[in-house]
Image 1 (cartoon, rainbow, N blue to C red):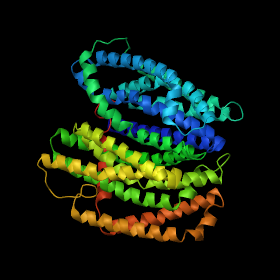
Image 2: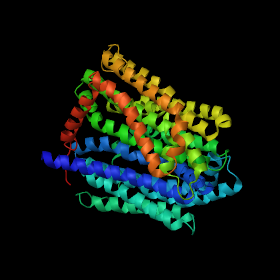
Image 3: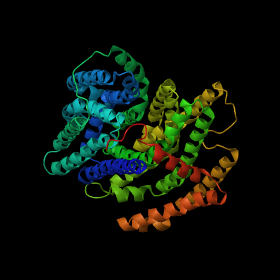
Image 4: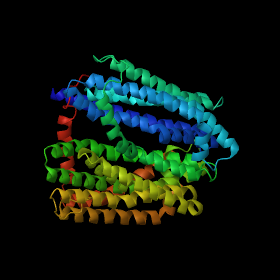
Length: 528
């Protein structure tokens, strides 16, 4: 049994990694064929309009899982699932019709700075992409159903297909009709939906149109509002960035999209890994009313984030041009596109640590059934982002918009800390501690000292960049070698002092990882 669980965990990890890689390859292919052109600005904007105005439909699947688990215990799991799936289909059809009717108005509201020609192109793309609304939420719900019943591997399979189809559409569209890209996106979501339905046939469940579970509907409505706001907060901030960017030069929106995709890769690999390993333990401790151990686990999670992210972010800031050059600069993506993307990528990086820390605290709030805090703080983040967008857009252009996003997240971090600490004090845990990086004061100073060394080395490296910059962008191999050497130097400057001072976070991380491998998937029978 233990071997099968470990094997399934390894398979899931590889599949999730493949999904992220395929998504990133899709961005690279798009950059190769279309660069930072007006077409990319238009299709990115059309996609974003759907995400912001209709993305709340996908959060139904997030709210579904915990309610479904409770319904299964009372024998009403199938009844609840039928009701929610029926609601999903009704809302998806209504949202499609609304998007088609209001397409011009939505583009005018979201992208007021677009020229008439560019607005028309965006509206035409939005007309095509709107049909993806029919499939997205029901597919997510099917995947949540599979995962909730222990079919973890099957729940990931549909998402692999979507990136493959979109990559093929990008290749076919080059030199023919650009609108094939939008058609390919819709077809990809259709195929993903079909696969998710097919995979549910392996269970005993069969869907029936029903709206009988009125209590389940009420519970879902109460849950979905804070979850929706929290989950689409990043899209909302990006939406306002694009709104202001619509007044700027060609390539502003697409360069922001490419740089944000690079930031999301780092965020997904590091933050998602840490939350996957440690979040189940936090939930377990809170369920046992063991708030002290839950708090200490949150502290451990945040220390690990600092230890990993500081050398990674330092490397990316110093080597931003080289990284964009390696990943994107080929085909239609020229040196000008590289400079546009690198500057906004660097600005986005400054908010990566606050964003990751906030994600950990948000996980704690969800586990502790305090989602209302996330709603309030998310709204404040959006408000500050809009203010900073207005301040920086004229002087710093698209880079200022990326910097505004980072600053808004950074400002929200102490607010998350304050609410978290207040919640701890309310429970009677009034020990003085710096939650974000410490479990013990001694470990705090070790991490601060190592961080100072790493940042100092990074600053020196950045000051002498003229020595290696001309060499590093000679070709891809030289750039990759320079990036690798830089990361090794900065990582050693951070991790060697921690190792010599016997900082225990690495050992605890490995220990938690082993525990998680044994326990992940054990909550339900593994059917794979």
